Amino acid sequence: MEIDRRAFGRALVAPLAVLPALASAQPAALKALVPKGWLIGVALNQNQSDGRDAVAVELVTRQFNAITPENLLKFQSVQPQPGAFTFDAQDRYVAFGRDRGMAVIGHTLVWHSQTPAWVWASSDGGLADRATMLERMRTHITTLVGRYKGRIRGWDVVNEALNDDGTLRDSPWRRGIGDDYIAKAFEFARQADPSAELYYNDYNLATRPEKRAGAIRIVKDLQQRGLRVDAVGEQGHWRLESPTPAAIDQTITELRATGLKVMITELDVNLLPTAGPRGQPPAPETNPYVNGLPEDVQQALARYYADAFRVFLKHRDAITRVTFWGVSDGDSWLNRGRVNHPLLWDRQRQPKPAFASVANVLTTT
Ligand code: G3I
Image 1 (cartoon, rainbow, N blue to C red):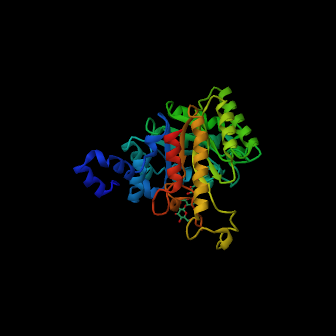
Image 2 (cartoon, rainbow, N blue to C red):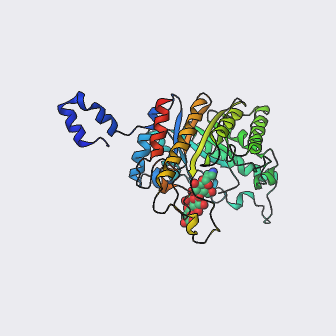
Image 3 (spheres, rainbow, N blue to C red):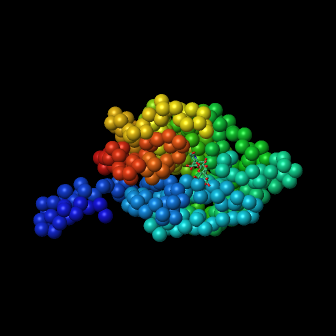
């Protein structure tokens, strides 16, 4: 409970006079500020969906109306060995959202990463043939989507199928099955839960026009095949320099022209320069904010988020969800051995100026 106790005490004796003070002591809840029908979501790690991180649980419960599992529903988490499905933590994640009346998102069914090697392997150690790989894909999707039928609102069916130049990535799924592995994944997902929303999800759609064109080709192909596809997800792993608000605007304009909804599915803003080689301690110049974020950068982050949300609101009838990739700065995948500050809450789980700027845009626009 974040109401200031003294303000609350004063409210008991002079209710009308202190109402504004009470209102300012209560941080705004993003879910109460977004346009009606919008989902505002956050990715949860397992400590959070299992309830061990109580501070984050309280924050998520108060602020958000949608959740995505950061890792739990990926292939290697769900089916590490053939036929050995694990659902314990996954069930708790789904219950976390359902208990709170949140939209529960599934991430992700078919991806080249975080998928165990056996999925693509033949018995002689080479690449499995089309029929074998399709059967593994179908079993995985049918089992996983089927288990949460009616409880998971929508699925990132295929994740990151594109190269930055817009051509199809040379994923083992594609090598084994052919280009129609994407269509097959959507077909199996639809069969497993006809009422679940189905999404194509990728990154750099706002920074690379040719990749965006590739995503549009994918969804048009799905549409021409008569398959269900509800939205395109731009992950939204962005930086202060790029994409610009104009590029975000152009991206949403082009994506929505397909007739699909648009989602920002993994939003964060990386404030660090490009990292040095993996496995080595970071050079100090690549890790400049170890002792906190300088005020000018803090403000630049707040402005960036405000500008982005202004564009989202301009397209409020096409955007259906904005999800942040992590609760607070300390939770973010963008740290990876360094100290990054990409989100709306800091390491102490306190709202940053970026939180206030987003809340302000949602309130005033
Ligand atoms: O669970 C193991 C643990 O047992 C082991 O001790 C530890 C040692 O490194 O690794 C743990 O696994 C890590 C896993 O996150 C869970 O924390 C992996 O190493 C690590 O690579 C993995 O990173 C995840 C990454 O996807 C993998 O590609 C990030 O948490 C997750 O935020 C990130 O999310 C992706 C989206 O799914 C797709 N879009 C891009 C986004 C960011 O990369």
